[in-house]
Amino acid sequence: MDTLSVVRVGIAEGAIVKKPQKIRTNGLGSCVGVVLYDSAGDWSGLVHVMLPEVPKDKQVNPAKFADVGVPWLLDRLYEAGANRRRVQAKIAGGAQMFAPVGSSDLLRIGPRNVEMVRHVLTELNIPLVAQDVGGSQGRTIEFDPVTSMLSVRTALRGTYEI
Amino acid sequence: MTEEIEFSEVVADVLREVGNIGAGHAATALSVLLHEEVHMSVPSAKMMPFNEIPDLVGGAEVLTAGVFIQLDGNLGGNLLLIMPAESAAQVIGHLLSEKHSVEEFNAMDFSALAEVGNILGGSFMNAVSQLTATTFHLSVPGVAVDMAGAILNICMLSAEATSDKALIVDTRISQGENDIDAHIILIPNSDAMAPLLKALGC
Image (cartoon, rainbow over all chains, first blue to last red; front, side, top):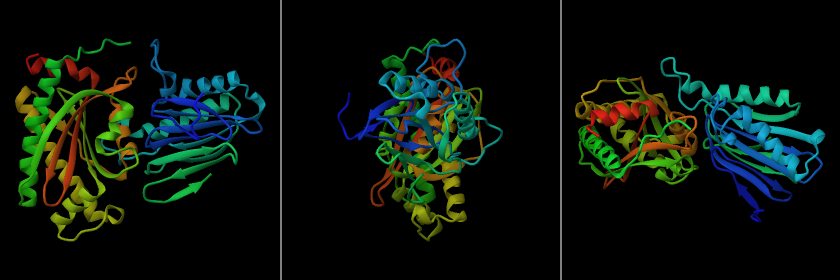
């Protein structure tokens, strides 16, 4: 276990931390940062997903995809000892960084990521207590397990907490 | 795993050369636009892990201006022009003879930024097209001012879903006095790699 006070999660990666460690990820564009935390326990986790769905029949890194990345993170929390009934979620990201060009699905990936994350959270019965998604701005997020607040920093619109 | 294109040193050299020639054309176009001499540095062509891509422009949180162009035709892919905030402000300020910081870019500034992307991207791809005897269509450019990591997300999306790396052909254009630093990043779709290399004689 890492002893840094803030654990950094890269793109298509996920990690869990124990209070009072914080966890952050930088530069979410169309990607979505999903924070799952035990609201009365010690463990929190963050996964930085890039794409909505895992390709069929492929061996992949689960942290890259919303549909498998969220359950994967939840399993990590359970293994560490988080209580299933107390796990809650906060999410941020899923922007559309560039105005649509032609009819490409590539540019709509942000909204599709958000839809999939919400869908998976509903399936898993995890309450989504706060979200800052969509729009066209990038976000850097940091979760503080002590206060359960998610700090969202944007390049042009300042920093706020959800 | 899908079959990965063998990425040998030879292939890297060929792609670097493509980037070099493309950047040469783009640098000429930029110098015509600015009426000043611009320089280009030797580009790199490599498979980069997603996490390292933002380091090309100084880190995921650096404020940047980006122009995104999609390529289709014989070979699909994406082209991204990305400039640190101050460089973008310099270029656009020079063109419109009224300089705004990127935070204060107005519609005119964004439009000029898109046009710079169009001209640089067009001249870059023109060179690649001649070199490979293939045809590309360039989409209307999309523009954004935001943190580098967020803008660069788009590059990673065009990589194969099962890969955690993307092929990046990075070229840098700089202009001494005004400290203009611009990166043109070419990301061929994974299924475009084989035909691209074939066209280049690999």
